[in-house]
Length: 384
Image (cartoon, rainbow, N blue to C red; front, side):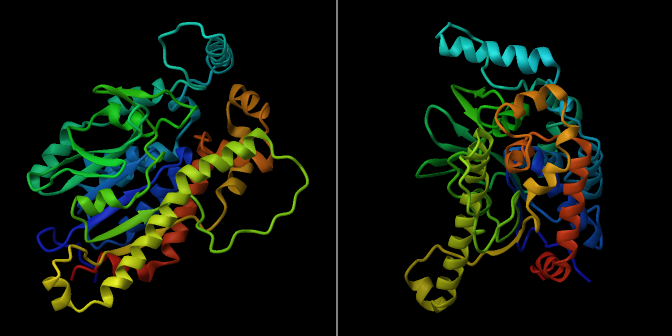
C-alpha cells in the first residue's frame, strides 16, 4: 500500500504549469491522484508551485492543504461548471466595443489610465476573492500540512521571472539570471498577475511593477520547487509533449490565430520540455559520479525524481469540438483572426473556459494518469 511521504524525511513538489482554460487538465490528474491515495484527505504535496492558470489551482490546493480530498473536490466543482463569464466579461459591449476603442486609442496615442487588454478578467478576481481564504495558507504551513507554495509572475519592466512564495522559517529566497524568489503573503493579486495571458488579460501591479503571465520568460519552470526544497516533483503540463514534430506541408499562409497559437505554445510548452530534459541530464551526470567524490568536491547537486503527466491528445483538436460553446461576442472577435477554424483552435483553447471543454480535459487528465497508474503509485510511495 502506498503511504504519503513524510515531510520530515522527504519533500514532494507539485508543479502546475500555465495554459488558460487548458488548466482543467490538471484537475483531472489531481482527481486520479486522490483516488490512488490510501488516505485521500492527507495532502501528498508539501510544496506546491503554480504558474499562469496553474497558479490558481495551486493556491486552491494550498488553501485546502489540511484536507486534500476537500481541495480536489472544490476544484472539480469549479472547473466542471466553468463558464467564460466566470473568468472574463463576455457581453458584447465589453468584448467588442471596449476592446476596439482601447486599441484605437493606443494607435492614436490617446492618453488613458485604464488597463489595456482584449478582455477584462475582473470576474475571475471577484470569484477568487469569494472562494479562497488566503489566510488558511499560513495556517496550513504552521500546522505542518504544507511546507511552501509559490506563484510565478513575469515583470514587464524588469524582464525578470519573479516567484512569490510563502513558506515556513526554513525557506530562503534565491536570485539567479532573470529569475528571483521573493517571500510574501500570497493574495489575489499574485494569482491575477500570474494568469494574465499576454494581450488577453490586463497586467497587474504588485509593489512597484506591473506583472503578467508567469509563463513568459520562465526559462526554468521546475526550479521554484527545487529552490523550496523538493526532492521529487510531479509536473503536470498543459500540452502534448510530442517526441517527433509532425510533418506538415502547406502552401497556405498562416492566419493570425495560427501565428498567435504558435506563440502561445512557445510560451507555455517549450521551456517546460527543455527544463525537464535538463533535469534528466543532470540526474544522469550525478549517477556517474561516486558519492565520496561528489562530497569531497563540494557538489551541491542532488538527484531529483520527476514524473511528467501531459495530455496524450492534442488540445487544439479537442477545443475544435467545443468552439461553439464560447459566447457569441468572443466567437465574433476570434473569427476575425481565424481562431474559429480547426487550424486556429489552438489560440481559442486558451480562452475556452466552458463546461464541455473543461470536462473533456478533466476526463483526459484522469484517463492519462490512470493509464500510468503504476508509475504514479511508485512516485507517491518513493519516500518509503
